[in-house]
Image 1: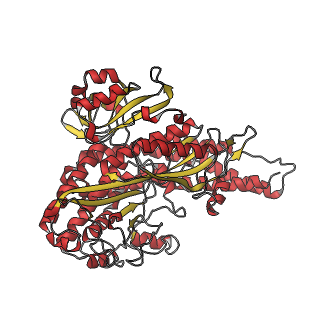
Image 2: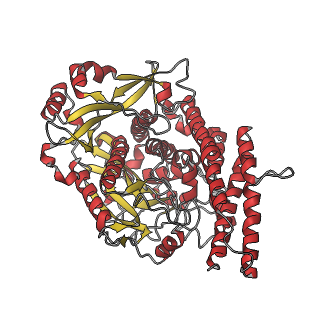
Length: 640
């Protein structure tokens, strides 16, 4: 177990300010247990590379490696349309400006030091054909750079906005700081836990039996170990706790807990945006490794259990200015937070985000799993709308909206936006990049219009059908109501726009709005070839997962839905219940000479690139599989 090691003897990170060649060499020579070095590039799909370079080889050629990186080819990364078979050269170039972390292997003890074998993971950039930087880390880095440069230019062009900020002049600003943080939710279970416990889990959720409750047994120990270890890396953990999902574990005859199935959350301190995305990557690896040491499996799936709360990854976004006198000022906060919810920059940011969410959403929800979570009834943020609070002096937290305002009247630096739609498998690099690009679009519009905070609150709070200088006429962007209880489905679709229900619907909207796509292409941050590459990657993933995983899994469920009663002794209701089940299962999975079942029709549509039809039939499949589960449950419950 990791707690058996002396942390004081171990290397956990090499901070960004310790990346001179002598300091790197000293750190690695003082820690011979760090046996490997890995350059970690992130492709357009959000996958990170991991190669093992012996530390000895790295030290022998360190200066050249840090300058020129290592080489791979397009088959190793997801960059469709960019790294092709006949033009596949990819270099992985280290990023010297962020923290580097050591990935500890607690299952492999170094024989010389008695410490876990470590791999120094160096976040890196991907370079195609020695000429063009590509991939998710590159896009986020460039989005941050563009936001900062454009915002400074706008502040100089429209200095009147300083009247509502806690600064006198744009000339007082030393630098802009874009901050972000994510909240990691995940499920843990014992490896052999395969029972269908949806009803038990759903009941526990409704009764709120698990949320913030005391952890016990291996879950408690693993959570505590993970929190302690994350602090060693310098992540500054704020808390770990139980989430809404889960059931009480059983204490087996051997004295150990079994049948573990619980949902947890871990939060850590915000930092600058690119570092925040890198941190999240490392945190996920650490958490999974530690829980595995305690015999528990971790899943970061958005919706691992149908009918029970899924796992989100709320993403916080803020913008501050470091002044030349050393002070930090939150640019989203009004200079008098008791009178206004936000500064004009804050209003511009939220308006830009909401207006352009159609081109952010594909980075947030690009998998079938993501859309399994984004359904009404589970606090899922499916409506493109915000909430500020009923009164300026009394901030509120509306959990039913897409993006909320987090603020404290007594602490202006706390003002930020919380995006509630991402999940643990969203591409955080592209989510944050897309969000900031949308925000600067809105900021530019409100500054050019010369609007005050009071006027902008009225714009954000506009009625459906009301004209606005920036926001769309036939949309509503702010509500303080409960989105699911206080609006019908028809009203939600009308006021907030119909939310895409499948990956294909999301991608189709993404590629159909040229004007909003230009928001992502600002300052060439996300050129068209990168957008098209992402589209091709997401489309391929959707097609292959639906065709080769979801359809076969559904067929397995259908085959397992078998007749259980004896005709000679069964009650009439049992015969009727089974007939309903059998009729539905045949409709789903049984072909005849006259009839092609739903599973086969979906497969054929995907094979023939008829994506609209495949998407519509996927929604039909989801409804019918849920109906099948319900009918079969009713059937089984009446049998002795």
